[in-house]
Length: 95
Image 1: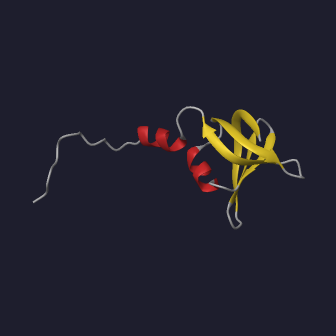
Image 2: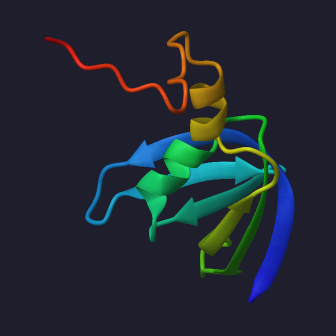
Image 3: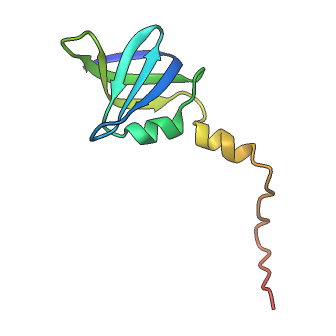
C-alpha cells in the first residue's frame, strides 16, 4: 500500500453505487469509494491530507484510507458558525 500527502485541488462526486469521489491530490487523479461521502464532508480544496491506497490499471490512485492534516471542514464550519454556543451548567426550561 502506498502513502501520499498533499493538497486537495478539486473534488467531484460521481453518482454510482456506491458513490465515488474524484479528487486531485498534487495534480494526481484519485478516487475514493469507501467512506466517499464522509471524505466530501471532511475536506475542501486547499486542505492538506494523507491518503493510503493503490494504483489501478488506468493509473488512478484508489484511496482506501485518508487522514486530514489539521482540522476537518466540519470542524471549521462549526467554529465559524454564527450561532452562539451553549454555556455549560445553565439549563433553561420554557414554561
